[in-house]
Each structure stands twice: as C-alpha cells, then as structure tokens.
Length: 279
Image 1 (cartoon, rainbow, N blue to C red):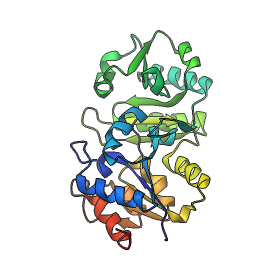
Image 2: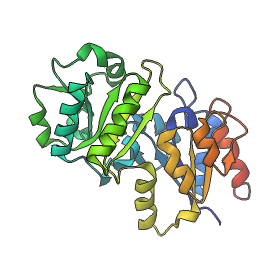
Image 3: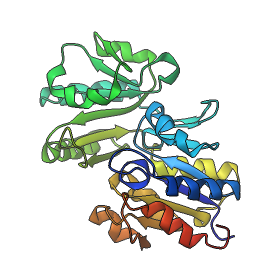
Image 4: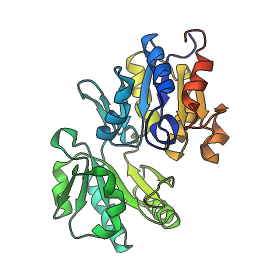
C-alpha cells in the first residue's frame, strides 16, 4: 500500500463549522484504522479539547496537540513527545511584548493538573476575554511570570490585530530565533492570533517523530489541512491535501485540493477515493 499514515487537522478540516465530525467522515476513518492505516490528529487545539472532539472516532489515536508541541495517545493520555519553550526566552519575549501593549497567554502541558492555559493576573484581562471563552475553568491565573519556571510552556500566544501581530512576529524571529511562529486569522471571537513555539514543535516535525517510531517514511504520509499551521505538513508529506475552504497559501503548495469543503465531508470523500481499494 502506497500510503500508511494520515495526518488530519481538526478545525475547518475534519470538523464542520459547528465543531462536530460528520458520521460519514467518522466511518471512513474507522475503516482506515481497522485496515491498518495510522490516523493521527494534528491540531493547534490543546489536548483536552482535541481528545473530546475526536472521541467520536472511537478508535486508538495519536493526537498531535498544540501544533505538535505535545503528543499523546488518546486512550491512556500518555505523553509520547513534548517540546517546550525555554523560560528565559519566554521572559524576554513577554517583556518586549508588554512594552508594545501585547498581553501574553501561555499554553502549558497541564492536562493532568486540570489546566491548559496560564494568564498573568491584572495584565490586560479584558483584552483576552474572547480567548478565554473556550477554556471554561481549565486555565490558571498567576501573579508573576516567575511562576512559569515550574511549567512546561508549549506556546506563547497573543491575540489582536493581524498586522500588528505579524510585525511583532518579525521582531521576535529577528531577535530570538530559532523559533516556530505563525499568525492565524480564521476565528470568530477575535481577528488574529500569533503563536510562538519551540523550533521543533510543528505538526509536521511531531508527525515525523511518530512515523519514524513505526517505520513509516515521509513519502508514505498523507497530510490534510487548511491554514498556515498546516503548511509544513501539507508541503512535505508524500501527498499534501488542501481543503476546498483552505487559505490560498495552503492551496498553492498542495498536491490535491478537495472537491468538497469541511461541511461537505471533504476529508472522508477524498480519503475514500485515495483508499478505494480497501474501503
């Protein structure tokens, strides 16, 4: 069989706009897994959220959460891989951001502790309210940045005007590289988000580390995505697939663009065509 592994994004890819997975897509993925294809969720979402959204697949899965910065298997929640930011780098970037009026949010590997996000109390809490909406009570407030010394920081996040975030991204890259960064804009509650992560913490890098452990080659991997945080995995996979609803930079580097979007079983339909011999 030419392809042995599928890396699939969640939002605007496998998930419909209502944040559910259609039964048809679930059935296709189940059949692939039952046939020996390694289906892996590759998402910018935290593990807690990704796990619950993908539970409907009802099969053992590896989840590359926080854009691949933490990798867990979904049955026992064991950590298979984790890439974090250096504390001193975080402090320097945060201080630079504060001087520019930017409010930091910290994604952390705290699944077992009951929180996935940390904020600094009294620091622009009104500005980050739209981001906190989806976290419920799974975030922690600290008094000062020194408390981060005891945490595994997976990503430093800023929300706001995309142009301002892109300008700050350029500043951060110029001063603190190597880092993995991107600005994403497909959100309802806010206009843009800048994510700053470990240089090795991308969906593609994490997917490669998983595939190497089970002797799957890069050319045997299919990657499906729609946004900038999917760029490397769509570009470098044996078969890179952009969703019909993907942004242009992803469509431009993809091998295939799906005929249907995320609300029309785009993932299930394209995989059914590729794997028609076993489905």
